[in-house]
Image 1 (cartoon, helix red, strand yellow):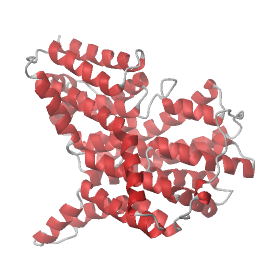
Image 2: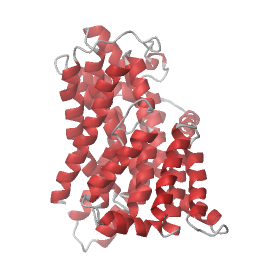
Image 3: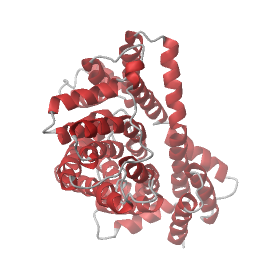
Image 4: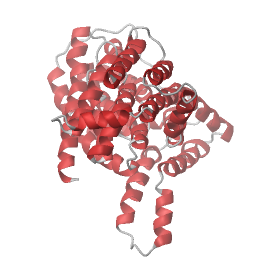
Length: 442
């Protein structure tokens, strides 16, 4: 009976989001409360359960996501992202433009949310298409594959950050493993697969109008190359170096280890990165403190709904815990003849195919899979990445990214499925294979 309730709850959640078009946060909240009632949680305990679910989920990741959004907004507004893209095109040359675009998408995709990166880089793609008379899909897909992979695997993006907190994984190790998983996924799903689409015909999209470079009208000018790269990649450098340092410092150096532990905290890393960006892309570029703060305020507005969706998923997770359903699920899933990481990928992929949103799919799956992690002893960092890989699978007509790609690149639905949906499936499957290979050595 309990499993039937959980199954019907997931079906109701998916139906609310996809058929009735109810906001994902409200859907999570409503379904979680109904599920709590159905599972026998006392009515007086339900409000406490809702509040506890939000508190325990958001407490560890609000700072990271908010600060990450601020950093991404500053990089976009200052012109640093466009500067990085231009440098990559010059560095790789026309002959290897696909690889240059993939690398650009990877570097820019680390600090920027997917939607921001997409809108920011599409004009660059088309300027190259017009200049060199190349296929838009051939040039653009590698860059967008990299953006998609960073969105699914790499902190400080909301989904992997939330999963790290939920599974009590290590942010630095997840980042390192995520980079190892991301590289083959980007290469195969981007430049390698993109070569098969060179003759894919596109029509001029009426929704796309080439945009003028806003930085040219920017009175502050464009930041330098070194400044742009250093600011964008600073969180990555800090997280990796501060994760590795404890292994090389002598155990007797307790103060040094404590200092590294403090500085290596993801929240502190993001705060240090924001302080640096405020000077390097703000005050150093002659912006006033007030103008920098306006950019940060706008960034928080952009991610408000993402934070609420994550909070809603935390309520559903807490209902599973409070009712004892998590333990029963763990005992049942544990006997299935499927590796836990593969099972995590399958469940997440199915939910992604139903709801369309990678973030919602990952967080919904996490609520079900958390007890399995505890009972099997699977590496939590790899579980984060397996779910991230599954969340990229089955992108089709219920996914906003599918329609953005279709309309901007002027494709038919058939050709969008052949290019975009296939690319997403490739990076998802390659990501899972890479995670399974890592599980053999970790």
